[in-house]
Amino acid sequence: MNKFLLGTNWKMHKTEQEALAYTEVLKEAAKEYEEYQFFIIPPYTDLKGVKQLLKDSTIILGAQNMHWESEGPYTGEISPEMLKEIGINLIELGHSERRQYYNENDFDLNKKIKAAVRYGFIPLLCVGEYTEDKEYGVTQEVLSKQIKIALHGVSATDASKVWIAYEPVWAIGVNGIPADVNYVRQVHESIREVLVSLYGNETAHAMPILYGGSVNPGNALELSKQPHVDGLFVGRSAWDMITFKQIMELLNK
Ligand code: PEP
Image (tube, rainbow, N blue to C red; front, side):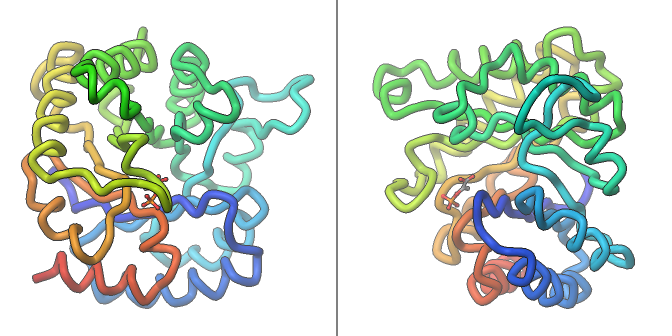
């Protein structure tokens, strides 16, 4: 497996000035922590400036969403063509907020994943269950459905470029309840099994599975040690470089 993945989606936070200031600090930190593959996913308006700043850095730059068509009558959307021109490396797809507030569904995500691989981006597919799914014992079924539809018709070669982020909806954000590490371990194992059933061992193990949802300096180390946790996808705790650096330092031990 490659380097441990450590990154963040800024959601609708950070003006360009804030984005540049943050990126300057992260760039320096990334030089100290070469054992991690860092990635950041700013809002669209920050991408060009941040890309400029990252030109001599190994930090992967991502966008928070993307349409599957290269152009067309889709007001308010951003195409793969536009992101390619900026030099984006990764596209986050299916964050639970996109699913919840903007009707993002697995079938459209399937088109987006195919478009992303066609354009040479790394698709970062987010999956996660609601509290009710967990309570009714159908987490595995829900995640399996999300993954199978999103990857439908995606070849093993293309799938090997996909990253999966497991982000239980109940664990995300200010009202999120941090997930128990044993639960995370079991779910990551079951996600790997789904990938093995779709693509066989080799491809399934080439696909990193990240965990996200209230990752913080108190739980990052334990989470990172779990089998099949190939990276951490950090929200709030990574938007402030002080707490993000604490996490880097902790994992390093
Ligand atoms: C997220 O929303 O993807 C996330 C991981 O957020 P947080 O860490 O703030 O819960």
